[in-house]
Amino acid sequence: MDEGEQTQWVREHLWHDLVSEHRSLVKVLDDVESLVEHGSFETARRRFGEYRLAQERELVAEQELEKLCSGVREVASFLVRLQRERTQVLEQCDHVWTCLCRETRAPVPRMLGRLASLMLEHEDGQRRLILADLPLSPELRTAQGELLLRLGHL
Image (cartoon, rainbow, N blue to C red; front, side, top):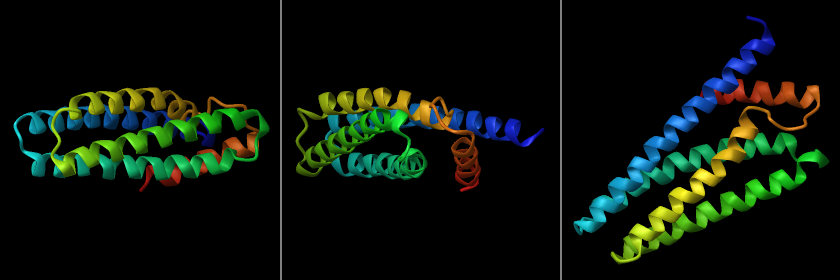
């Protein structure tokens, strides 16, 4: 396997792992909703904390990949959209967390549904970033591949 094939394999492997993690995180949100319905706010907060930790790891890696593309004019609007989506996801997390801390049951199912929707919308941008579905120079594509190899070994 040459270097280009290895990088593509890593890209696809990381993408597969990310999609799998997203599906697991949606199940965590379902668990949180169920726990809230039963009044188990402490356990719901703990479970939602697991979601937030996984999400933060993912977003840190995403930001590292974005840095490589930050000077490329052709992807500027894409990066703005990705950052806006990330902000929306983080803000929605904060809203859910606030409700869980205040033990306010009523809005939680709607808020969790919105969070899951925002995650799904953001997934397309992450796919493009990881699979290098962007107009990047060969040098940036190589640097991105090297970064993905490092991220894949974390």
